[in-house]
Image (cartoon, rainbow, N blue to C red; front, top):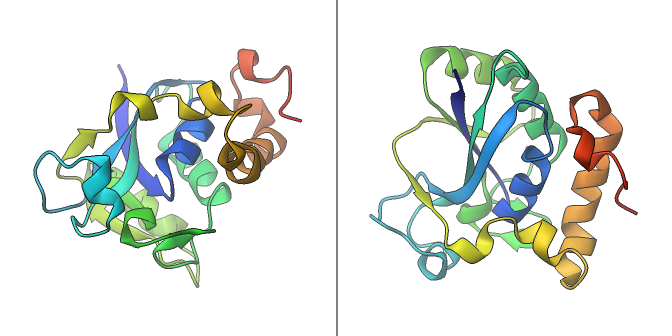
Length: 177
């Protein structure tokens, strides 16, 4: 039986690239959560007026990877101390958020907070899938889009270095150069 987690840690291209590499994660969907507009799209969300964050929703097997480990990866692969920004991506749509699905997730998320963290811990309400061209963006564009090289590659490298035991075998080789 799988469980669901929804997090936002900046650009969803980055978070998707990180979390799809983890053992026990069976599905990662980029999208939008935490806003006030029904059926948001990238154009509206990127203006920062809908209240949504670029988020990912992932399904995972808790017998293989725990929510605790998911949170460790989440905090290690983005900057939870910067309000409404990740690098050059600035705006509320890039904020750090854990959208908890139950009280157990909420308590665990709260226990992971450290001084200086600005990550919001918010009850999950709705998730809207992003447009199809966002799905697997990093893997489809890592050799052609400089954003992938400059912004996403370092996050994937950090994941591979800090969490090598948690990585699916197909992502261990070749290692991102």
